[in-house]
Amino acid sequence: MSVEKYNVKFKKKFGQNFLKRHAVVERIADVCNLTKDDLVIEVGPGGAILTQELASRVKQVLAYEIDEDLKEELFKKLDNFSNVKILFQDFLKSDISNDISSFSYQNLYFISNVPYYITTPIMMKIIESKLDFRKICMMVQKEVGDRFSAHPGTREYGSISVFLSYFYDIKKEFFVSRKEFVPEPNVDSIVISFTKKQTPLSLKNQDLFFQIVRDSFQFKRKNLRNNLKKYDLSIISSVLSQYGYDLSVRAEQLSVEIFVEIANSLVL
Image 1 (tube, rainbow, N blue to C red):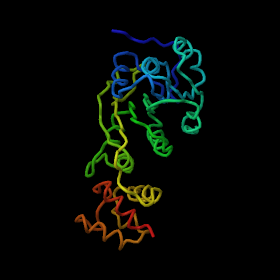
Image 2: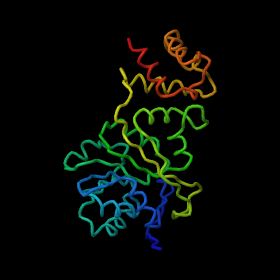
Image 3: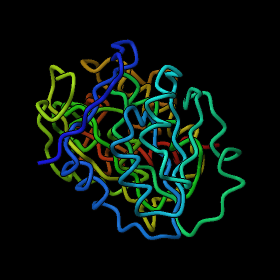
Image 4: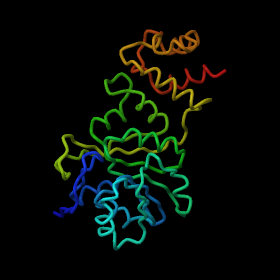
């Protein structure tokens, strides 16, 4: 059983917990049917255990690493790979479209053991980039994975669940124990994949849709009448009645289809 060793000082502020078994990163890479014509974006390569596996399968890996103290370890681990480019910068502040403009590739993937403290901002950055990712595969904290894939009527269901289910078909791939990391974190993890929907629901105004969903979940214990009072409640009420609801319903009960119809109905 191959266990990776790292000669680094782990930094809690960057959420650094590195995978230590190659069998796990092989399973992560297996989630996507990668080819030698593909480009993979990775955030937080850390000690490069996943980066090495990806680089062995694809044309090019573009990795973002915010911790410049990892340069020596990364360059050492990736010395045999000429198809890896590392940008030592903050992914959340990067212009991804510009960063990949010089690459030629067949399909674009995002595959990463993401730093858990910025998981949701990373996902929103990917959505807002409007890049055509064939598939997104990330390892996240188990509780976050539950929120990402939650269904209406469940405790975990929130605005991020709605956003993601609008854009993607979401699948929980496999569980990863906290014991697979060094240093060992306080939480277990899950690998989750996102495949772009072939026929997304038609939206008249995406920004309005995002805003209505955020406002609907702003105060989770309040109903739509209270959370959406700055909008035309008579229009919202009319949409809700078609699905057997009224303004006393809470956002956690509503599917993405209902939110889309509310947003479309409010477009002047």
